[in-house]
Amino acid sequence: MTSTQPHKQPPRFLRRARAGLALALGLLLAAPVQAASGDMHLLIGSYTHDSSSPGVLRLRFDPASGQIAERPLQTLASDNPSWLLLDRRRGRLYATNENAPGHADPVGRVSAWRLDDEGRFQPLGRTPSLGDEPTHASLSPDGRYLFVSNYGSRANPGGQLAVMPLGEAGEPLPVTQLARHQPSGAHPRQQGAHVHQALFAPDGKRLWVSDLGADQLVAYRYDPAQRERPLSLDEAASLTLPPGSGPRHLAFSADGRHAWLTLELSAQVAQLAVHDGRLQLRELIDLAEPGAANRHSPGAIRPSSDGRFLYVTDRGEANRILVYAIAADGRLQLLQKRDSEGREPRELAIAPDGRFLLVANQFGDSLVVFRRDPASGLLGETVQRLRLARPSAIEFFAP
Image 1 (cartoon, helix red, strand yellow):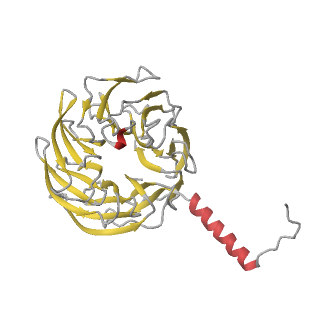
Image 2 (cartoon, rainbow, N blue to C red):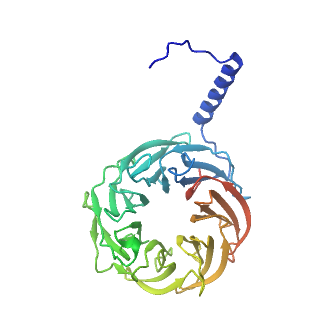
Image 3 (spheres, helix red, strand yellow):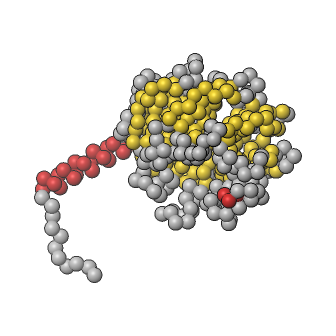
């Protein structure tokens, strides 16, 4: 029922204060993002369905001190932008919206933004990924397609890989191709396919898809001449992994000669050799110490830019960062175990100059900065602990 009572105005001083606040906020949101000399920014993705996070945060990072400014330079409202992909060449930002039934937005999507002339990200569009919980996206070498990993935590329908063309302005267009794999059934979490990542090898010839539910690295050939269906299965090159291992994320050396893979369910890192563009399993490295009773779960995996060190986050009950030295043949030697100083270290990133390493502790609601020695690869003192709600992705960005 509509009230017939007259609206009571707040006091004049309060109306003036509100007007001033609205004006200041409007100026802040409309102001260009100024870049100082040597300035560096961070783009932080997050989960919003179980937190107060608004979506994507843009923060200022001081490359000299490693300090992060607490006040965001820009906020991009978005539902569960858990993975970020920055196309630096075109000034485009993409996020997978890891939505699922029961969330405020139950539809998995990809959202996109463009950098405007004043250095601010503006909405470019969003498109359904045709699957639940899209958890990763990668860009084709020619910048024409996104390859979206729909994880799909429910066994039915499970997950699938989606091919999403990009328009002339970089906007995401409707999905044109889907690929689903057969689950292994070796583990209770493998009753359906669960695509976790799709990554091109450095030579751009094959797309490697990590399917946690299938215990496979599935290889695809890429042919952009087939505009609607640019991927074709390369079954002979695909790699079957130990039953119940659960492949999560793959990382290549810069020269493409070596690769490493986190196995989420068996809590291992697989060391892979590359021969004629195909992957071969060489060694399995356990994250847990012999006889350890606590639960381990590898997450992020990142080699240093000089190719000498590899960093892996160990989640579960361990909550730590493992530092490995990379030998000339790609084999790994454990150098350090460093507490992540927060629960569920989901993702990490190394500063461009190599002197700092950042970790997103998802359930610890924190972004932690560690000092890093580029010569030894070891992590040193904690520089900063910044409280952020459910952080999940980190991208360095030079404005």
